[in-house]
Image (cartoon, rainbow, N blue to C red):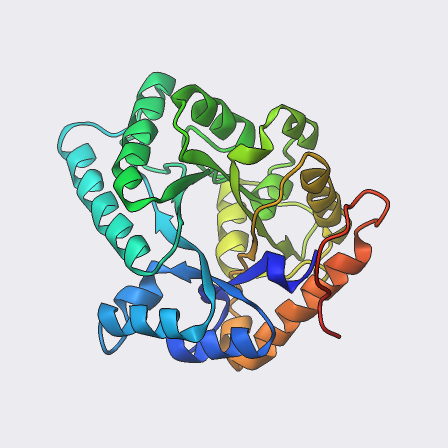
Length: 291
């Protein structure tokens, strides 16, 4: 495990997109998870944003985030399909091969597993012409799907090659998910792993989880769940996951610091995580993180 396996999310850094990309590259990262807000909000427009990403030398880990897509009906469903099409076009323009879709929090979404499967199957089919994979993530405050096991059941039943899971350590740890159930997940259907820690032992309600997730995540090695994050990464490796990792760290303090300072914290986190992983349970991979 080294920097080549990791990307940073642009949401962790302050400033314009160009400065964020430069800070990541100078810290030694080779990929970036892109937030739609950074692309749509570029002062020179989307074409300039795409150019900045493509000229940065960073590979796009993925693009986020499509929200509240599944479980809607009639005009609400049609509206979300239009949004999804637009986001898939943006994802394709950036050269990103994964679009992140979060489980719905909408009060208008119905709890019908068959409909959820149908909607995600449709989303995956929309992504096929672009060569994009859909990574479905269970938000720990999702209305009907709030655990990765539920997300996996839907993904598995949908039976689309380009529909898989995004696993987020924050949501799994905050909701105390059963990691033993990972044994039932096909490693090739995990399309993205997002890692973060946080500073308190527990979040007692969905509202507290939401506030913590959106404002006070920290990098692995900085919080109180560091051992659990290492255990999760180790289990994923043992089950055969060989895909990308991304730091999804929403933190109001980090966005008040210069981007290079935060990117360096992220680099140290990769180095720390790699040092914690047992070499006896990890196959040797090419490359070493720089000191």
